[in-house]
Length: 181
Ligand SMILES: [Zn+2]
Image (cartoon, rainbow, N blue to C red; front, top):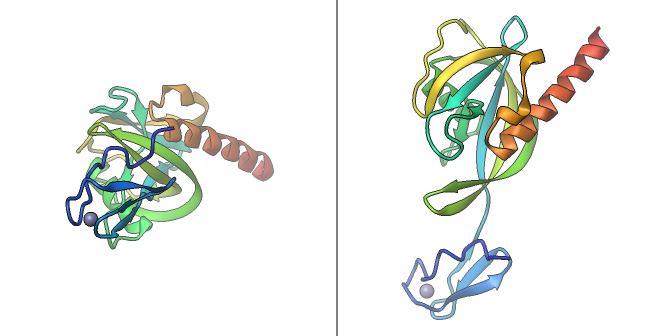
């Protein structure tokens, strides 16, 4: 298997070519001793449900998986909590302000970007927003709409972890409905 830091051939501190595999997750410079660990980036995903129990779905405007369905969310910024990152991404992509957020589960993912495989840990949150009628697709979103949970087909979601997350969410929702019903 290819080392996750295969793309990084030179030491980022001293520029040496002696930047070699240290273990499965890191490389070390033979000249200056610098060690760099490859860690996943945290990303957030919004499972935003309205008062009619419909899920907010986006259509991707850009690659990867352009034109397929997606959920609002994105990478967290440095110094930001996951909740702050989620609120910011939802605001940037939909114009909506979240008023309730609860963490559900996480899934590891690989996001191809700029010829590099970015490893992420996607954090899925169930959330609600005020005035969900004032949707405005922005940023990397082509269109936004609400889908009744019964009409959601996970295979239409192009990104692997989002597709898995939608499946898990639907399973959990069915169980919750059975318990509550
Ligand atoms: Zn070095």
